[in-house]
Image (spheres, rainbow, N blue to C red):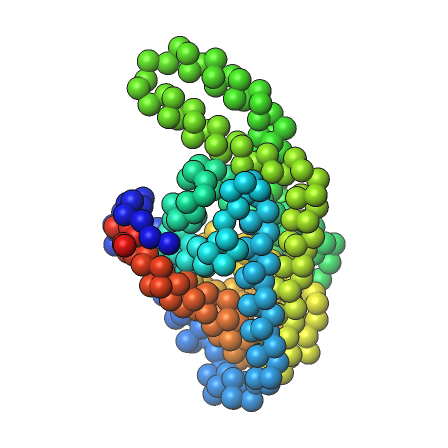
Length: 335
């Protein structure tokens, strides 16, 4: 993929208050871990881990990559289907940027790199992907809320998530069902606009709404839901295997509780790569099941390498191969 078109610019990280707040939270988490962890025991847990299980967990986690890109590809029109391999690369590049930059800038980068459709259309397809993932998190959260053994501090966050999810789902469904009415209203309003960019704004909204129309197809919606269940089931299995790898008696409840906690933690400001906060929340979540800090931290270190560091590395390599500049202050493709 080669293009000379400039991609969206963003403020440098050093000027973004969220970046510094994330650094503060990460530093506080690292300090807490330094003073509360039995480091010799953590090192022993890492050395004695069952790395055959770790390899299986890595393979399972990697298997979700083509599943996620295939699910995303379903939301494109049959006449303008991106190649699966290229779409997978774009997805990984965007994921890497989302982890190292604030405000989910990777989503905008993905939309700029997919050339088969407009930026607004691709952004709409990503809204659908996020809605599917949010649905999975909400479903898991609902199931976990019935487990009386879970702590009160988590239940408040879980209930807030369900409320937010309800609002998001209502909005997405409203846009899908009322797409034609919304476009008719905007078209009528545009006739009264004197704003020179009114037509461009209307086209942007029209393309965005057109992308949401893919979920009006029962087959596309059904396959997307099945793929989502499979993807999130694999994520839970990865946690389960890694718990066993570090010598913990694994349980599905612990594996999926940790999965939901780490998903909720995305809303917490953190340093690029989620260093510190990711590990702190893993230790906090596993403490609910009586898992000591040393084993929990060794688990968190391995999971962080698999789910955060590895995708960043893959995204960076693919960006280099595709001549994509990941500098958030001056995104562009060269060629």
